[in-house]
Image (tube, rainbow, N blue to C red):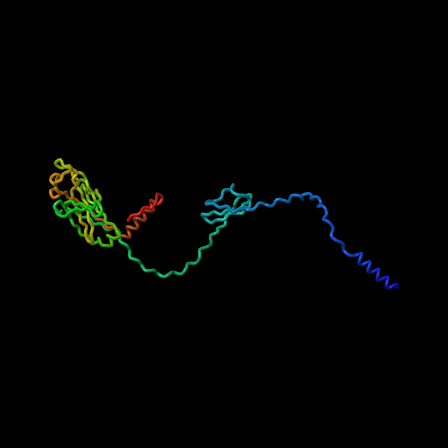
Length: 270
């Protein structure tokens, strides 16, 4: 065997002996190391406080801010000497904007209209009936005296969406400033009969019709058994007041009443 052959054979042996072996089993884990030292505590964060007045010197910590809501003033940061002077967060007034187009002027609604007039004892007319419904399609009628007062302010629109209030002076001779609302009634004792004197009114476009009628407390099948008749009653002189309230003013009144009672619950007036 020559030298060349020997070298080649040795190289093969050396290459075979240098090949990587298989991976061995994992070794046992080592012990846990000791804990590191605690780090330095960081500085406390700052807080923005709010309120409706100037902040108290005892409020908050150094570095805090305070916003006064009523004035939009910002205080801070707070120092060991206190809050210091505030900075206003309200910007300066901006330039005036261009004037917009003028809208159409609406019609001004009229206020309440009052009509006061006297009615003497001999101005009442005997005839007609005061009618009262006590069930669907069922009513009763009482003989009545009536007086018609014209009123141009009493339109169909008022009757549909406004109000009509009528008052009179039940004690005109002794107290002309006492105004009682209609309907109005009081009990009378005449010749042993008990009857109610009743005043009421009926509205229609352009007029108010006043009515006076009797209702008997004393029983009886016949009219003469129930006391005096309406035609025999002599009414005293009195003044009447008719108040016409337009629909716009009526809605304002209802709105004002609703605001007054909003804490107790809403009411409705139809």
